[in-house]
Image 1 (cartoon, helix red, strand yellow):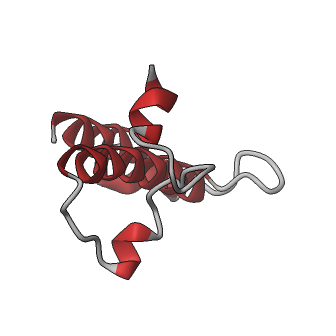
Image 2 (tube, rainbow, N blue to C red):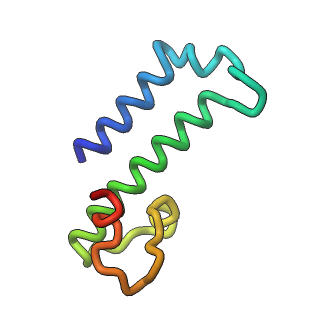
Length: 86
């Protein structure tokens, strides 16, 4: 939970006060600071939700939440996500 909290704090820091950094426009063609920060937040939350689900093994995830959790390369892999983060 601390890692998810940290990811949220990072997202808010990337936004700046009152979201000012997200309202400055694109830094370069194809680079949207809001979309980039949101994608990183989604990735970090997905990884840590996956770790919790993998650890407790009995937690069912909603389809929406399961969509942001990285998928294992092989469904038979036990502890696949923890192994990726070592």
